[in-house]
Image 1 (spheres, rainbow, N blue to C red):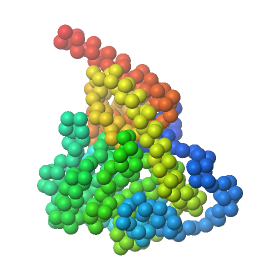
Image 2: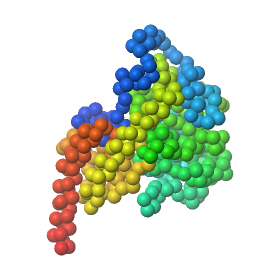
Image 3: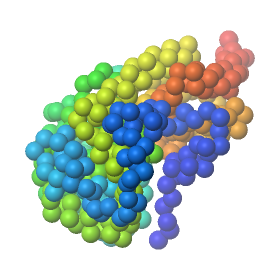
Image 4: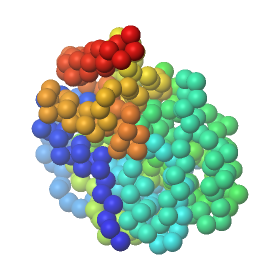
Length: 385
């Protein structure tokens, strides 16, 4: 079987440190080590005294207790600490997707689990969000039609990447009902939970169903992607099964990373980090929305509810891969083409950088987009005016 490459991640990894302006990220501008040390009260002496040893491979008890604390009813035994949420997703998929299994996968979506499932020999049933009025909505009728006794897992990202959509309690419960009907597991990637622009946290899948793996991490909502700390919260039995598979991957997180993550998830520090993220989102979204509004002849969008991402439909004479490459090569600005989400007439624009960099990036986008708009208008007039 041919290996399925992760196209979006390969594209970003290739270019994100080679361009002058990176608008491909879905999180806010990262906090510095100094900022985190100040927030947590960590000193340089504390770090200097830290033994660079293998740490508890499923995560230290204090860190797991902090993670359990914001998943009501969870215990530390139901938490597995991983190297980023990507490893948590990997381990859950590896455990739940065997050759011949079926998985129902929400789209558009971050394609990691989709590609993993295919590489593990599972059949992926694609379940698309519907764009209705000014919202992205889950198609519950389609979900019910796809879920069968062959369904091993249903995969959701909530809040969603790339749309920034979030889902209400009735919708979450309806997804759970579909899984319960056939005894399927749910993998709920909640890495954007806490990054809601209005400050009202999304409804979590946690605590509503027993055959559930909720994954998350410090990258998106916390602005700490470089720590590479993620987690899975699930049943104690499933946590042990995933931990056994982790023995084949990273074994444990880094000692320094886990030490800093433990401080970051102390409740009062956690709240301050989430507040920082919300301030950035609330400040930056109107800047991007105004820029799009000035070009509403070619852009159409639904305002995101969470995450530093806008998924924007456009009408220009280039497909998204070609347009993204033109932006990268001509003006040094990177964003994610909709083709990486199988929606070729969309772009995912990140609005999490500092204001000056965001405005610079948008000015560079304008240098490419505005001439294309003018050319399209000219051609339309030439044929129809």
